Length: 333
Image 1 (tube, rainbow, N blue to C red):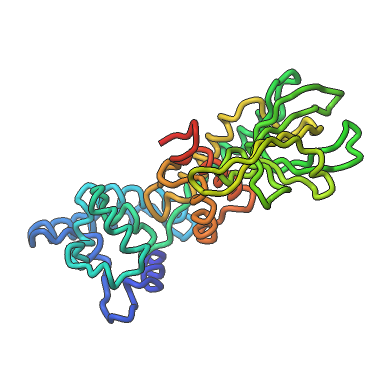
Image 2: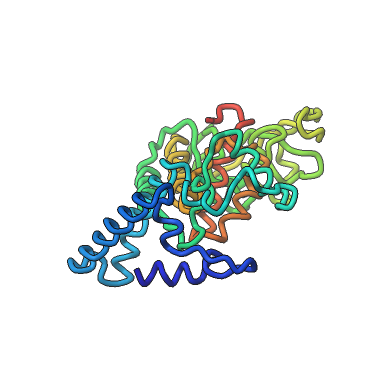
């Protein structure tokens, strides 16, 4: 218990401005009756003694290997009893929501309506949250394997990373960058190069950016300033949701046949794996359809610093969430 103890001592459950300290038993032992409290304390204590004698987790490395498994067990137990131990100190009905931050008050109101319980959102409170990276790592490996065997006759291509687009097959002039998951229609081929067309939308005042859908800031490509005249533009119209002006655009270019997939589904599978791996350690996984496409980037930016996710993973997670947001055509709930 040394590692969990050190984590608890660095948390607000150990030291806070109110001078109220919640110990191990306050969170992990039920308080509904003296009998249940004594029985659980005795049986779990005995389990710990047996585990210690058997050398189940002899050092920090062994504990880290078990962190995710143990956390899931505790979360499941707390969710099953409606976070009863949390409610020994925190009574939702007695909360002064007006004294809370706007975001906290909004979430607590939503939780009351949806029936969510404390542990759904408050997981990394007293202990470091685990990251379930195995699934994400497997999905990333699968992407690389698929990209290495993309059919040469693919009619559509989807990049797994940010890639340069060129004016011709000789790659003499770079005219744009295509972003991960953006759809490209193949119109021709020459050796290892593919002629492609990118269709999307341009917002008034942002001439260098091609977005995937009108009114949705899902960036498909960024065009070089001196290549903007290569875009074929339609007429502007007002987006009903944002009130801003958008018009359809297309760009033709050449791309090297590497880091490309013929099907977008593996990209979405990877994004979903990232969401489960890195976001599910601190709170219940929020489905992509919970927010709009334009809300997701700021949410991801605000949370990603709490994880070990790199910039490439952050980008892929953002695109997965945006493309499956509640206001995106073809999105998932």
